[in-house]
Length: 210
Image (cartoon, rainbow, N blue to C red; front, side, top):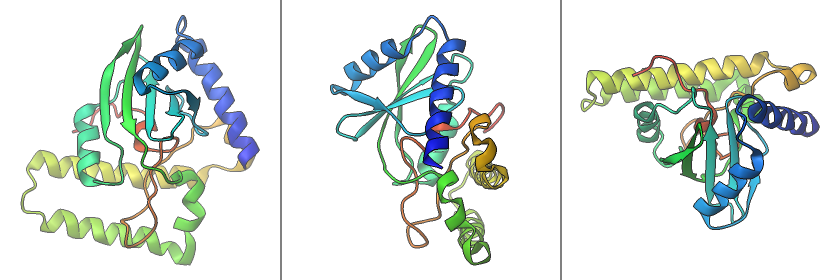
């Protein structure tokens, strides 16, 4: 598994900079070092439309996204509100050529792809708890505006889709697929799950959401 993921990350990094020339990995690393004030290294999981590094002290993450894959900061704000303490806080810090640059804190944890076996144990009990807790949260939170309710439902649907896609992936073809990631349930159900190399920031920006 680790060898497959390492090869996948190398492929995604190479493909990202090939598609986004003349930007280079060295330029992005230098920019990230300026932003964090420390050395940086690549995260173990990458995305198809982004390049992500973490600071040497493991406290800060910098992500470079392709010009047509900018994060929807309103949607990200919904995620940060819905998963307060589990989702990283994103900050748009500018552009490097045609790339959008984001800074976020490192919240630690593992990716949903790597945790899917745990999520599926005991007849999917953790996922069932998630559905019940989410339904209770939406129906009892009287402060929700219609737009906030829509965002919350979109966040939950995204998590369900990610789990289904992760289950469909096999190690035999992981190098040819995206890594879909997300969050584990609330802290009373399982350990913290979002990480810089497997956080929500690695998702492709939704085309139409919120």
